Amino acid sequence: MRFEDLPLNLRNFLIDLEGGEKEAYRLWERIRSSGLGVVETLVEGLGYREEKVIELLSKHYGNNYTNKAPSEVFFTNNGVAVDQNGYKYFYYPIEPDVILVPYSEYKRLRSSAKGQAVITVAEDPVAFFDNLVLECTLLNINDILINGQGAIYTIYVKQLGGGLVEKYALSKEDGEKLVRSIKARASKYSDVKVNVNDRSQSGKILLEDYAIELRVEFLPAVEGESVSIRVYNVRGYFNKTLEELNYRKDFIDVARRVAVRKNGLIIIGGATGQGKSTLIKSMVLEQNPFKKVVRMVEDPVEIRLKGATQMQTSEAFTFADAIRSFMRAVPDIIVIGETRDGETALSVIDAAMSGHLTYTTIHANDCVGNLERFILKLLETNRLSRDEALANISSALLLTANQVLIRTKEGKLLPIVEWIEPDETTRLLIAKGEFTELRKHIQNPIPHQISELYTQGLIDEETYAQFCS
Image (cartoon, rainbow, N blue to C red; front, side, top):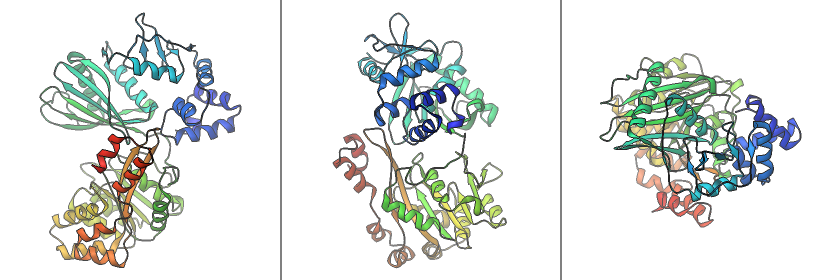
């Protein structure tokens, strides 16, 4: 979110804290790029005195301020600590009647809490859900999972590069009420059917007042219907450089070298939510989109890129349809959100081999796996032999990279990337389909980089074990 789009009280707080608008603008840019919330960045990342921060927040939001809170508390649906008398304590003014405390005090409350209380949705599940989404947006949380578990429904949240964290527990009645409410809202924006609960459904919800789009998946289960929600902040334009996204210098050099080429294929792989589209947008910015014809098709369009023409897929307008349409518009750069099928793969390789710099993503386990899966997709069409598919990939490929996002102990989000930028040797291996031998040429394999972070004490043992066990 840009500084000028911030709520007035937050802008005034930053101006007051820094003593001027220019200084506040620069501070907001640092906060925005940190991957943490406002208070966490100021106190833990930038070393501001937390009492001063909370006092100024209290001044601009009209909240009460205290240095201490009682130790016997439980947590409400907004993550607010509540004592036995009903007084609420938090480090950020999300409600007018919250008593503000320093962030260190709030963390103490969290660590000393007896356990997660079963909370109520009350009479308004819509307001409950909106508060949940807005809090997740404030805390840079991208995924929400609502799981039916028999007598209760549990709500989990997940940051990029982090694991699932249990947030709230609801009674079965309230959990079912919440799921019905979400499904009803999704039916207004997509083809979700409210009365269907025996099969999976995909849809979306728009919170237009907050410029938030939600992608929702409803999954029937034995102990209660589950909902997976991906949160997209669709306000503003993407403007992050590779340095601002915390990429290593050796990969930045490679990414910049291929990003300015006139034609060829760049494949970025990895699991869902690992920053593949973000990396591609940052690479596209290496060529000024205002001086190039940039055509992008995504599902969904997560964030806008100024200067690019971005389109959304639908049942009637597939990725393959988009590429054929783009080719008639004489583009310089084509970005295909994901290669999911053979028709898309065939269209992607055609674009890359006919004078266009072409990006796509694919789900795979490593950067050689990107090529293996892409070739399998090509062969699905029965229009190319395996030798022809291998030859086309070998000729067109500029870069195959695979990425995961890792959150360090300090909360910093690091993209970990392995890649192959083909040379004469690796192109020959690709053309022969010798993928076992090709894996020996991977630059900085992901497990190697994870081991380095663990040795340096930057990540915990659980994160290390996920990649290096």
